[in-house]
Length: 172
Image (tube, rainbow, N blue to C red; front, side, top):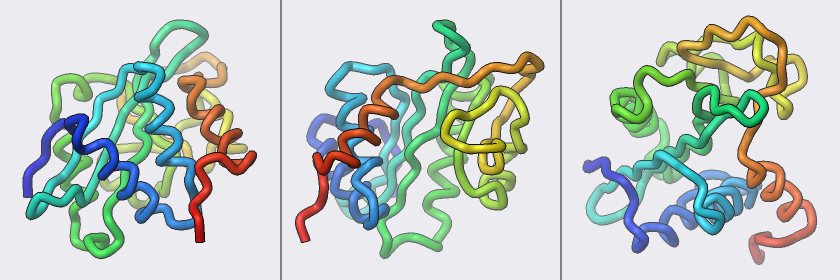
């Protein structure tokens, strides 16, 4: 198993992985495609096993108004046939050790029971616009005391709109 930044040749493989890992959603693949198309800053890695992309993780900027206040972890995906073997955990541990990530405030919208194993804690502030009551919004190194809605890259909302309008839907 090898973890490295994705190359342009990996982009289609990452999109396929995201569609496989999230079979009922085209949102994640559309999001990554939109972020890349608009040249947004991303920290991303793939996990390669026998020349196959089996896992992917990405981080994008989090905002307080127009100021960057940390990073959002999204998405994290593992090919279905490799899930349950610790690959996602290993990829996340790897990412958390990287210079671009360590020391940063990190936010994630996900399963609290899983992410808490890696040091994420429930996040009361800032408020996540995608999670009523912040029930699944967690953070690391978050010292925010002021109340504000954390900002995401516009592509997070655009991807949701594209999926709802039928763009990027999988053919069955």
